[in-house]
Image (cartoon, rainbow, N blue to C red; front, side):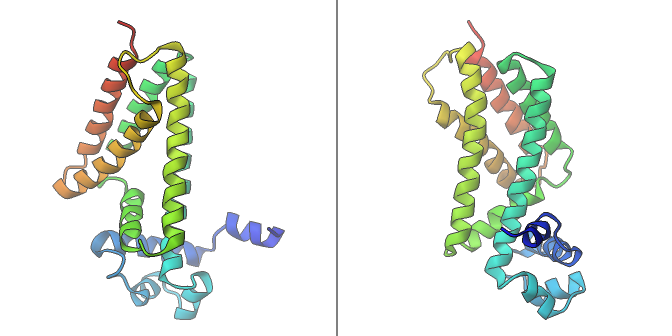
Length: 211
């Protein structure tokens, strides 16, 4: 990748950022398919040609939203688990601290995690797009690898008290978060997601704490 292209990717233009922000708000309100290019253009105060300069079509917009969501979540998870390990050298305690910090983080977001919701909507409504499916799969496998690494560190010192596949346990974290987001949105209870994360934290504590 050339230097100019790399710099452009590292520093998105203000217009592109505004369009993604407007699109995110509209998609959360009424879905991806019901969101039009015209309202994105009007809300971001750009021209139609400005939209198509940044995005070839709506499918590329969906991919850009997913990419931004993945980058944001990677940054959040990097920070959460780094803080957990800074606060404890014990792998189990570091995991439990990280999960509590994770729950507290979601508790501070009044209406849930907008990035997660828009990613779910884009994925569901763009299932026919191969690149969207690939992005979602890569993100899911990336989270599995991240959580699996944490759990393997715990299991080396504290063998689980019940038969459990560590990859399945890693997926359980993603499932609890993604499912909690959907449930919180459906019930109108933003605190549901942090509670689900804390329940999962309790399970891991029971599973790995020596008898």
